[in-house]
Image 1: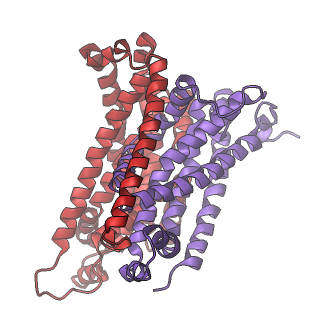
Image 2: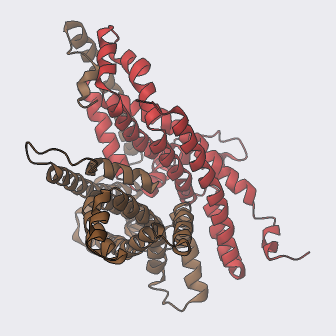
Image 3: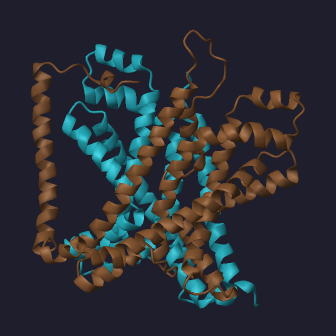
Length: 303
Length: 231
């Protein structure tokens, strides 16, 4: 069903009145909920200017929020950069013709996809604390990145696998007909095409990673990311709710930017795929949008 | 008899209880998220503009907020500040019950956005003719959705919904940040106290999660095949 309005007729006079009534009722319910929250916070004085004032002062940003944000971005950036090659290796390994490569790669991917990131981070934090002499300042970052890399590496492995599997068979056949070896086929022919197709899915995964960095400040991990880094503001000014709201807005803006980028890439790729007018379709070339949806489903991680 | 798993004999470690808590969190959140997500999807395709706007805004806001922030907000915002208590203050387990229910509320608010998007993509897979025929019969928007479109849409999105469910199961570990006694809270206590058995602790918890997730995935895959609409 492509356009949404196939679900209902163009409203006539009766339907217009009904829609108007629904609009009013719904607006009243929304306003009631909004007022309940507003007045509840107001009673506790959460809207008082003094609690919000720290956020218009530069020092709050330079001392707490920006360093926290920087740490969040650092963990997310390191994770994606390390997880990409690991994901590529595991994904390609899973498609290998040798059983002794395929089975271990598959086991690793399935194992780490099934475990919550929080558990991986908690484990990594203790592991580094007891068994390595990594400096305790940097240990939380190591723990956070380890957890994120293990999980997202295996998720990206599935994205890579779906991307490569969706390429037309003729690509691999043609390159082996030219006499390229399997490694050459993979590196020179299949991977470049698959990576382009996967770009939207990769950016969406970045959103997931960014949201998961929020876990790194909790429990025994103790990484000073945005939420934990904003703790001192709450301590100094007693403004739990305003701080939480500001932090949430920062996350939402960042993730909306990434989501917009992902859908821009998707649109651009689908335009590029279109055949020139009059050309016959070449058969089973995949639709990149369907691919992105498919690999998203393949990640097992919508969240 | 001494085995390497002796540390589990500590009476403070309620391993079974904590995983039962994880399962309960998943179960109630899944039901709530399915209902709320379906309502949101209905709003997003409805003829009333304000509902469409609300649905879109809700999904964009909640999907892009880290679950940790949402769960913290249910505890600090709803409970501590707004004074919403979801358990009677007299009962001896009032505090634990309250954070358990708040966590479920948070999971529903977050997971429903993914359920909504899955169902919306399912609605797109239903052929246009189905809705057109339904409208030609004189069904109202609500009837078209309830009788004709949604049943078919649901059957085609079992697989994506299964992924959402599995993600939810893993996400319930976040409830530990407001002190719900589920698996990850127990594990973080255990790795602190049992540093000798660190690897065993991790393998144990990881194995139980794998044992929960893999059969769930297989089961849902089977269901998806079973109810698939043949076109």
